[in-house]
Image 1 (tube, rainbow, N blue to C red):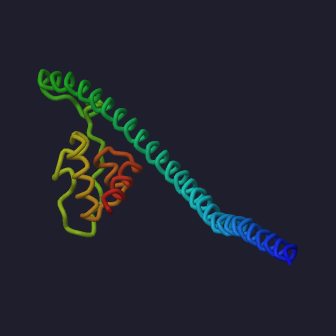
Image 2 (cartoon, rainbow, N blue to C red; image 1 turned 135 degrees about the vertical axis):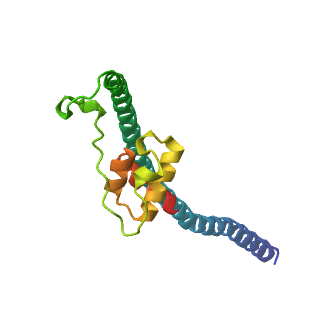
Image 3 (cartoon, rainbow, N blue to C red; image 1 turned 180 degrees about the vertical axis):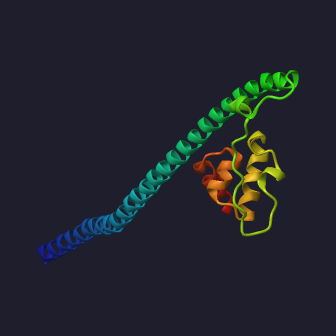
Length: 178
């Protein structure tokens, strides 16, 4: 009977050890199964975020390129404007000294070759009447561009009047839609 009791106690101890050992293994198995989908979800979120960041970086680079192009055109136009002013000053002083020069002797730099834009759909005054156009500082020029767009002028007409690049105008109009 004593041996039967010893065998029974050994079997119970073995059963308790087996249950405890398997419980840890079962608990680890469930935690790994729960962690695996969470890890996959986190990896998918990271890939999606990386793709979105790459697209945003591409768009930012494109916008920076457009801004650099616009700045270069502004600087080029400012240089041309300064040169035409310098050329116009001696011509104006010589025109004041000379009584009247025949039309074929008029310097080309003093001739204003800007074309008046076609009338927009609304009966608004011409942009040259609103502001000096090319001579407007940055903030005033932006206001002029936005007001001309509201009045129905096309991007080409605005570009001709203000001296800004079409890309700069389109970017400014898109940024102000928000």
